[in-house]
Amino acid sequence: MSDETRRKVSEVYRKAIRKSRERCGSTADERVVPAGTAAKLAGYTTELTSFGDAASSSFGCGNPLAFAGVREGDTVVDLGSGAGLDLLIAAEMVGASGRVIGVDMTDEMLEAARESADKAGFTNVEVRKGWIEELPIEDGRADWVVSNCVINLSPEKERVFAEIHRVLKPGGRFSISDIVAEDLAEFLREHAAVYAACIGGAISETEYVAGLQGAGLVEVNASERLFYEPEVIERMIGSDCGCSGESSDGLTAILPSLQGKVTSVRFSGRRP
Image (cartoon, rainbow, N blue to C red; front, side, top):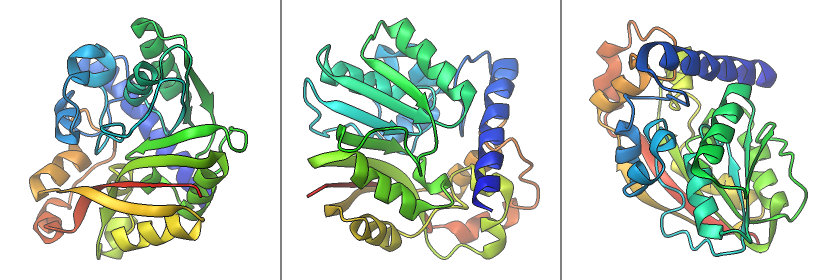
């Protein structure tokens, strides 16, 4: 079941890139809503003009690097790096003496990230193909692990949390922006479009914190909550250039029932 879920999610995002290129003239990762909208909603500001294409094609649910404390010379690992906006921001923060490694399971995403890094002139960025449940990163490599609206898509979140602990150096920190959801009906969790829109696979904030702590991470904090209104959720699920690539027919009527149940949250903490 887990491998099948990954395959479906990867195929959805693969189709989304092709669809966005055909319909929207984009060359990168069109995830949820029309280009640039989600990046603004997620809290990106100067990055929207600094990094051009990568910014306009980023659709995370937060800015995990805002005020993160990443320093020059650090190594940053980005789980589910997509088209690479967070890679570029991190690359600028760590400088020439630092290193940024992105991991994604979809070839088209990796290609988009490489193109973004090359266009921006960064030589300290590397992208690797792999699962976030089994990171192609050596133990204790990272000063920082970041992720932007990706872990919710994993069918094995406990493994992801354990991998974060494994790849962090002792004292290394993480900053994760992600979607959490409370009391979703089971049929919504099983709906392909809702899952691919980063909602169906989301767990509660309480479960998320407990999962991180259960992996041995400490000082776990949840902050910067943004509650999604039903109209935003509708665009996430059914945008013309969105990530789901699946029909959202039949979901409109239940959207009001999701009021207050879907939230983006920033999680932070460290490895002891």
